[in-house]
Image (cartoon, rainbow, N blue to C red):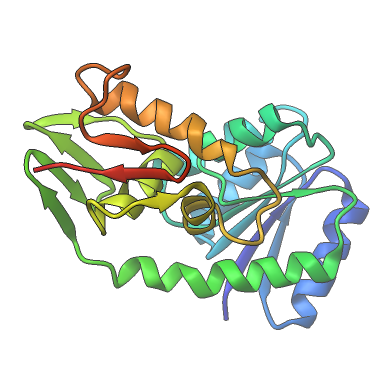
Length: 227
């Protein structure tokens, strides 16, 4: 039985989410503040975390960061009444897998939970590493090295680089990359890809303004070239 940790300081919302997920056969645990949530996470190591953004004490952003410091793979779904693009990008930068606006539609939430839990085992079946010239990506440890130098990437930066590295020289549209990295159910915009491509260039290219590896294909999208 899959274990889900639900973190929300609004008790009625947390109870409603717990009820509907329990009806679907999930083993659920509740926390109403960030400190308690972290204790339960370290104790139970759930298969998925549903996390409210605005909480007293440790907020959702900080809790997401702490979880990702311990575990890079467990799906994290953020719940929030704040729906601006910058809030979304910050959450994704910290490693959230999905972003769901309040008021929460419970059936939609259940569908997204099931989708992320279906996707999670696939990551374990990926090849352990990809090497393209001086670029080395280790999937199991989620580390990246270029010319023996460690490159510190965020969760989504890693996923974006990995998506392109699996098929080097292929031209990906923004929509294709957005769908692969953020998922077709994520309510965002494909221009988020442009932001993350810029971040990757700043970390991987000798001259980000004249990239040699992460190339723009005008009117289409991007491709990774590394030999």
